Length: 282
Image 1 (cartoon, rainbow, N blue to C red):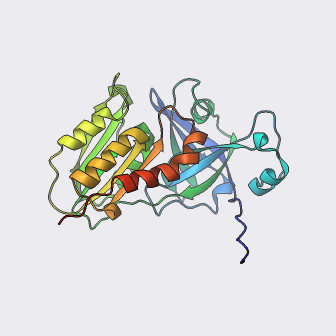
Image 2 (cartoon, rainbow, N blue to C red):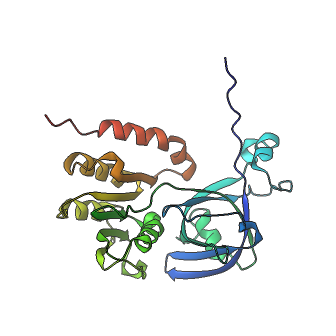
């Protein structure tokens, strides 16, 4: 039997906090920089993401920092915790990486860190990953997301050519959570205010009610897994959008921690795809 390849732990980048800005009551922007980003690049996709590394409380890791060594030498409960965040912007000239964080007080891990981050503070991360960028050849674009997908939606709109057309639906808690996003004149930007409704309910209603323009659509739909599942069914079965014209996945799932969701996400997505494969047209 052939030997299975040894999977290497990805190399961690080290950056320092350059500045922070609270852009809405519940969103904080953190700009990272420093020499540790000299070999970093994130300009291929508009949904590039990184995995921020948070050390276990009270644990000091050997330098130079090496995830493979940590996993080899430390018990699992002392491994660092990671949190996945979309790259809002990457400035290759100044080696500055911008990441937006949704913050709800002391809830979670990365949000409170971002709210309290100070210039000069060091942070490590893995990445980038990613796989979507708006196709300039598409007849029109559809972008749908809650707060977790807002940075990717914004980055995608900024990447589109001036003549692009389409619709972008972004669901936030209230009007206070809206902020300025540059979009081509032909792309309608729809801010939906959730209020006390379940996450994604307003997005589902808006997309179902949309009069789809004719032609080839390139769609990006991300956010809470529950509404993403329902929209996937609508877009694949009712609207008959081909699978290869959809970038669609749950960034998070209501009622599950980040670790629990990541453990089942791939299998969950594959199962949903099988269940929702549209019947062949006779």
